[in-house]
Picture 1 (cartoon, rainbow, N blue to C red):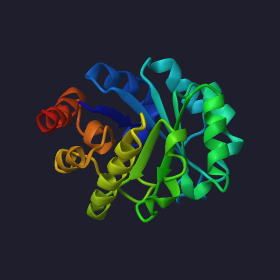
Picture 2: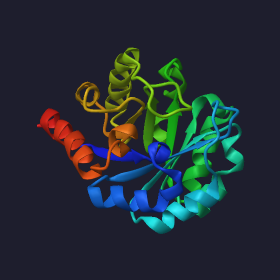
Picture 3: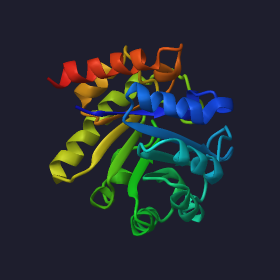
Length: 221
């Protein structure tokens, strides 16, 4: 069975610690933290200080996704803040291999991410240097977007690349993940499912998470 990573992008930031604790109690496996700088993506979210506050609110793994320019400048700050997984975009890193190595040298898991229109060829030479690949299934920047169906073949292809190398690399998907799309993403080979609106909509977080996980179990079994 895969794991569910609840994206705080859809949470109420005025009650962030409370909501993080609530989705932990409701059964999410990880907490996904989207860091945006207003340059690499057209939105601004949070920095290391907020990540440090989230770290105090939960014992779950923090899956920190850096959607920022020059991410190599901020790796240490986010590791110090409590990140367990630290993801950088292939589009933002001119020296991708070096940046990924730096993440691992800092003692956390390294993720390489790519946008919907970015070919997988840029990942081919770093698959043995990462712990996870993140395929964006929406254009990054905002929560609640519609799933881009054209990314499904890309998820399948990435699964094949990982399997062919026999690499111990997880495959994560992020964007438009909900009850209507998760079956196909499981079939395509994803391991980690980032969900924001599908987790935080309404008041029944446990029910939302349970329904998503039912789909994951059904398709895996």
